[in-house]
Length: 455
Image 1 (cartoon, one colour):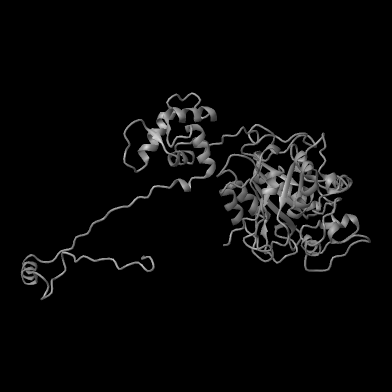
Image 2 (cartoon, rainbow, N blue to C red):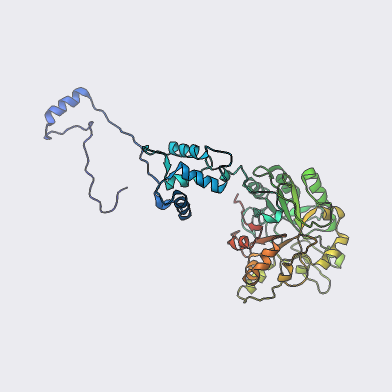
């Protein structure tokens, strides 16, 4: 590749090129070339480029300068001070010497005379080297994992069963497997009755997505749950089932997971267990079982056919409104912020929960470890903690933004003991994602991502 407007590069005649008549020395050269034959000379070399200081992040350069005393090099004594300050040299007297030796041996530069020392680039490479800096190794956890589950950010998926867009893609266990292989700890499954009402399908309700069976998803979760991490896998269930199908879910879950399924003895948890205590376990999280429509006087017909409701009821009150929320977003996108925000995600009120429990199968209710729900009232009321029990609350990305604008401290207070899940807005039909930072800075543990696999 040549730079534009650059002067022509002088060329030199190779030893194998024949001299033409009329060239200086041509006659003698031609005879000599004919006698000796022609040959080619090839020279191979590798050019190495040193990383410039400009490529080193500013915070790394600042750290280097602080511990090197502003000098351009960091000696063994200075590196030892850094390791002691960060607690990485405990019990390792010669740690600094070994690190400097390894770094200097690994770099391809002319050895310097004098005491061995690191440049800012060497220091940068050390910080991000899995071989030299153990805390960044993926296989080693350097946090204390004995605090309650609510103290940790949890890698969370949204509509984990979809292979593409949110409206018409196929449902499969393949994206679930892929998510678990990269370390996702929260898998979401939307449960609906199949067409014959005798089994459970996993699909995005009221869309054109093609279903996959619940049993297939559960079996794949068990097989791949702990290939990337030993810490617990949480299955969040969006439940649209009859009581008899809920009982079938309980049977499937117990059959597939057996002893690795964790569920508490008590009705409510006052504090979540720690990730360390839950190693190798699977947990269920869902809203408390809702009364089936027939028990309320309505009749449910499969999607695509007419649905009848008793007076005063509608589809939203029966099924929750995560999918109809698409319509709400389109209508309400330009509305101004309201202080008294109403919770629209569709969790069951406490009174409704008590009514629903009467009809839900005992086994199914007992297996739900992380219960999702809210008290009656505004969204701000939903962020109030109950000292007697912990729970999970779900907010869409817009709901989080609205409540965070004026009630950020309420969110932070809530997430100290409880779990907050944030999910993408319903209009992200192409499975795009939102900026997770707002959820993280307010302590949301389950910031759910679309990570669908295009098969």
